[in-house]
Image 1 (cartoon, rainbow, N blue to C red):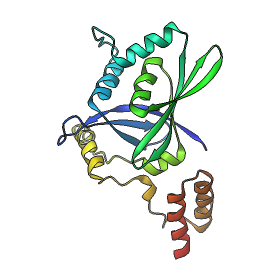
Image 2 (image 1 turned 90 degrees about the vertical axis):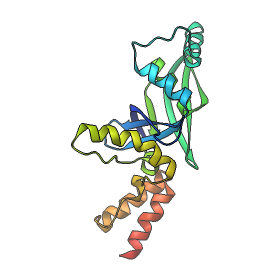
Image 3 (image 1 turned 180 degrees about the vertical axis):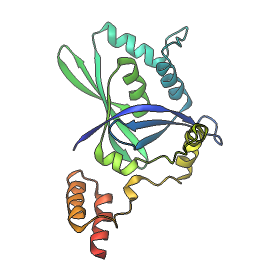
Image 4 (image 1 turned 30 degrees about the horizontal axis):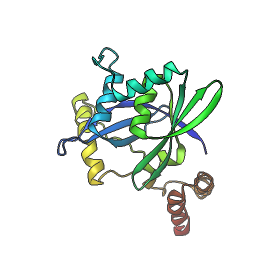
Length: 203
């Protein structure tokens, strides 16, 4: 399965639920966003890591992990968001010590907080982005873009966001659909494959 590199677009907050935030990841070579609901502590830790000039007086948990890893020559090389089950993202830290790689399971919010501190790249699999990625509707006015981001987490929590996997396939030719079907099956994205198969059956 092919990996897609992501960067951090920002953190959105809920206007209706206290303590609910969404981390917005953006595919580097595309327009899709991957929103992940995270807690207030993790949102604060990620925000502090993004704002390089903010230094808390005492190390936060993720800073402590970084200091610990530095002391014992452990490097986080990359983070991979590798699974999505019932709306929950699962991630792995790819670590290295003495040229030996280890894979460590982690919550996605923690993994990204650490990726920022280690300057490690963040990846996900294409089938996860196909299933959970979204296109944000952005108006030409910047204020509207900020407003769109701020209400995004409420849309996620209410289930009103349509993932891009539900794209309309009617404009595709049969040959394109068959190619897309093969790709979906190869990527183990069976939900998308079923939608494409339904479109082929209609023809």
